[in-house]
Amino acid sequence: MKITAIHTFPIKLQMKEPFVIASVTNFDMYYLIVRVETDSGITGYGEATPAWEVTGETWQSAAACVELFTDGRLLGYSLVGHEIGSLEAVREVMESIEPHNDIRLVYGNPSAIAALEQAMLDACGKLAGKPLYGMFGARNLPIPFTRNISIFDVETTCSKIEAGIQQGFGIIRLKVGKRGASGLPGYERDYQVVRQARQMIQESGQPVLLIADANQGFRDVENTIAFCQRVTGMLDWLEQPTLASDLLAFSRVRHAAAVPPLADEAVHGYEQARLLLELGGVDYINIKLMKTGGLLRALDIIDLAAEYGVKCQIGSMLESSLGASMGCHAALIRPQIVSTDLNSYDLLSENFASGLHIEGSHLTISQDPGCGMKFDEKVLARYRLEL
Image 1 (cartoon, rainbow, N blue to C red):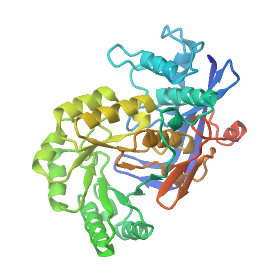
Image 2 (image 1 turned 90 degrees about the vertical axis):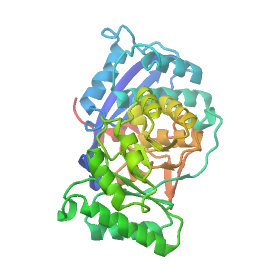
Image 3 (image 1 turned 90 degrees about the horizontal axis):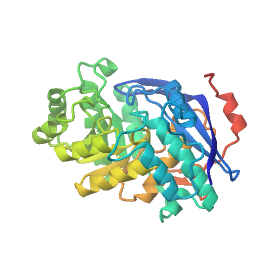
């Protein structure tokens, strides 16, 4: 089965309510849908979720990147005509795009590359008549996810924490790191919500993990250590407290504070993960397919982290249900993942693709071939943006 054409569809979806983190507030989400056509008549679909504050991409740049791989005149390489009828064939294509030990055809642009890979794997799975997780020998099981709470005032946050405990979530994840939130000085709001969350968990008697995600909001080592000292014994881990560019910060924080650190924005791809693991200083890594350039490299990073005794979670860039499906396959293929944030598509007012189902604190994906998602392409016209 060979690729005959590649098309892109930029769309915008509205969120149910503003999603506030330290680095950005999202009211709407922008996506690039990629369609791969083949000579067998099978069509594969993928999704790019560009995050300019993390990867530097926009939907326009993602579309331009996909066009590079379609046209081929600038790169001297085109995906059109390539064989993608087996996992091995797709791996070979992705190794050309994202080689471990060679010059990359295109630097960066991970969400665009993830969308291309998803579309190829979707078509490959459809040809085989198997869901992607099945092609890797994995089983379809319910996937537990975290209760993810945006930055609200202390009272609202606490009410959402209480609801999460009552709903039976095993992990509650608080967004923190927005200086002056709730009108309180410095990071006082963050300390208050962490302290009250831990108290509510203890009073409930439930075995709930409490984690906080600063999205770089504490900025430097000094702020991070000061916060960690105030919440010692309250958090199970703290995600990306310092600037993504400062890979050395993790080891400094780890040596001075008792809260285990997790790297997120600091790890975009395999090379950065390897460097950070060799430097030491992290207990966890947040794997996001929109940062890693897709499923295959995400699996590589998870395996690499395991060699260092570092655990991984699978996070979200606020993908729609189509993009979230690939994170679900990754979680099924690597069941040692400690947590996921793959339900974030439910923060959108509407989703155009079906195949994911939320029940309580667990997520299930269909057993349909490929990535397991279905939608009518005509529906995209309701959300389409003009290039």
